[in-house]
Amino acid sequence: MGSLIDRTHRELSSDGPESEIAEIARTYHAWRGEKKDGNYEDKPGFCKSATLEDIKSHHYVLTPGRYVGAEAIVDDGIPFEEKMAELSDTLYEQMRESIELDAVIRKNLEVLGYGE
Image (cartoon, rainbow, N blue to C red):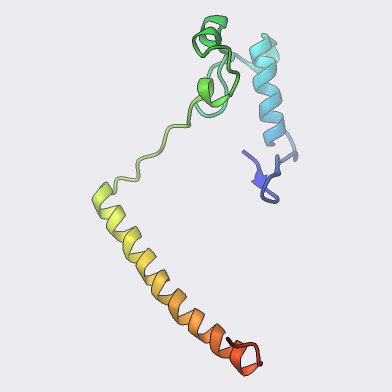
């Protein structure tokens, strides 16, 4: 949830009843049993009502990821081998472009009198 505003800060949306802040509040109120917010249910990657036994089994470590887990990944239907080959091709092409751009930058720096 939220959008990264810099390396260490994430900002939640707060516009209207569909905002991320409202969703968190509704989830909390449902967990507390407030009828107006519906029934609470655990959502992987978002919320989990951990029992004391759950917490004890993790040696009382309260890191959320131990309990909430990760959101289910949507399968895009592309086989891993095919997707990996495509991603590798893209990466190698970007690496070739990087070498070309480095040469252009070095040449421009030399023209400006900042060459090695």
